[in-house]
Structures are given as C-alpha cells and as structure tokens.
Length: 129
Image 1 (spheres, rainbow, N blue to C red):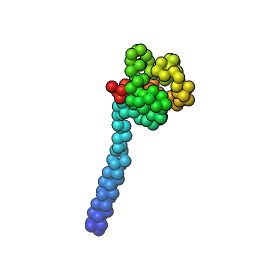
Image 2 (image 1 turned 90 degrees about the horizontal axis):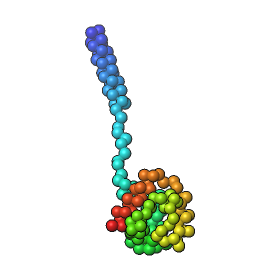
Image 3 (image 1 turned 90 degrees about the vertical axis):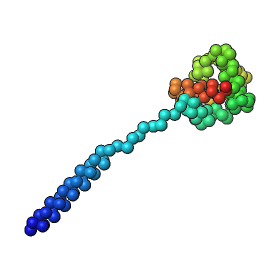
Image 4 (image 1 turned 30 degrees about the vertical axis):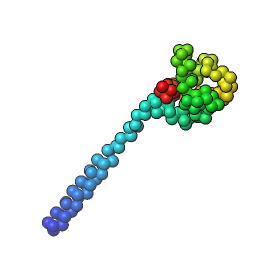
C-alpha cells in the first residue's frame, strides 16, 4: 500500500513538474525583432523593385531617361530638391523632354512613404559618387 501511495505521489509530482515546465515554455516568446535595413539598401530595393526606376534609369548612362549620375549631378549643381520633384511639387530640370514618360510612374511613386523617398534619394546620391 505504501508503495502504491509513493508511486502515485511520484507520478503526481512528475505530472505537475511537466505541466509547470510546459507553462514556462509556452510563456517564452521568441523574438520577432526585424533586422534594421540601411537607407541605402532600402533605396536600392525601391529603385530595383517597387519603384521600377531601373527600367528607365541606368546608373551611369542614359537609357529611356537620364542616368542616375547625371540626375544627381544636376540636382546638386542647381541645389534642387529631388523629393519635391518625385512628389510632383517641382518641375523637371534634368531632361524635360522625357518627362511625359516619367509621368506614368507617378502613380507608383505616390504610394511611397516619406522615408522611402528619402531612402531612394540616399541610394541615388551614393551610387552617383
């Protein structure tokens, strides 16, 4: 009889211990912290992805539109605001003749957040150096 009681007690303790351990494991949350992405990388992803800028703009040569190096050179020389242009708050200053083609992309650009626009500008500035 004592062995049976001892065995039942041991099983109860083991069961309680397992339940306690299970609760502890359930309460532990695995981190979901996102990896920080630099403004340059975000801009690069937008240029080559979401924005589809690469289809008309190459880095160092004219394609359908002017190259990024030329764009950034002119914006720097004229102390102009690229983001204002992308928001359609400023006139085209680099290649106004191809502006009509660029207009079709403003529907996409309007979906960009302020941070995305700034990241795109960071990327274009750095790759044009």
